[in-house]
Length: 391
Image 1 (cartoon, one colour):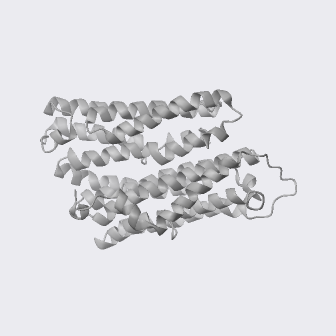
Image 2 (cartoon, one colour):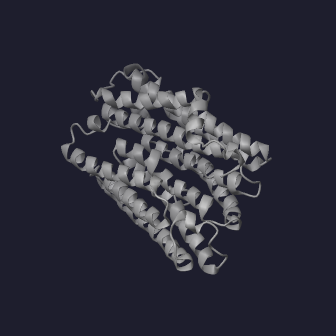
Image 3 (cartoon, rainbow, N blue to C red):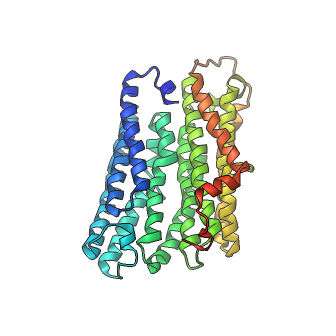
């Protein structure tokens, strides 16, 4: 997709590929490391690469968004690093397994929990630390926006889960669980309401990311809270991680194709694309189905599992938030989708965009749909056998 997108932008293309591989390598290292200091190092590689990728658009708004992203990311990194220093001063080790059960209830370790958690919440763009995300994701080139939304914000969430599994004592996990879940629920509602107000497709998709990330944080009250470990919620959260990544990347790639073809991404620019660009319109519609959580998509499976876990323990506040989030998601997606199927204006002029743009977006959209039809194999890949009783 990126080769087609940057075909007429040689300078941006020359900057994109090395930064893309830095980002890719940083993400690999982040997911493979088992050391809290190396988490900081890999987070920095990912963040600095992502900031530079946002800036390659070269527009004033893009540079402003990248600078805001940089300052926010550095704040999160410094908070996390402060927590790492406090833990090392207490335990003299940094390895995740060696830290298991070592930390005592001292003021320094509690301060470390707070600093590291806040730093990671900033990186994950969880409400109310999300203000950097919509400008960065909406102003970045489309392939960059897809990577940021699908992968980069998930890295900090993944680290936070790893810390809950190994480093944080049980009393800390339980203490943080409800607060993280509440912030996630507010993010679902707030992000959806903001997406409903946006005039541009990419801004709507960016605020949708704020909302969809909120669903992930329900894993903490449902798996690390007072009610014990929920295998259903565990599966649902990781299913949502992957299904959201596929569908949201598809939406951003499709939005980039709309910009190439129509010269803009407001609702007026979408009018008539269903008639003139059927593959592109199909990609937008199928990806939106998964984001809305409609069957038989992967988004439906992840949210259904989270909803089932909430119902099983009688957590009606989580149930209500999930249902309201689904309704709002349908509202903001249909607000744009309906424009695709209106008659094309007589004066509509579309530019010839590379065919790979709509085909790549459609491939991911179909993949998001197939995830709802082949749930068993995907769950078997995502969740290790024997975790029904907890990690």
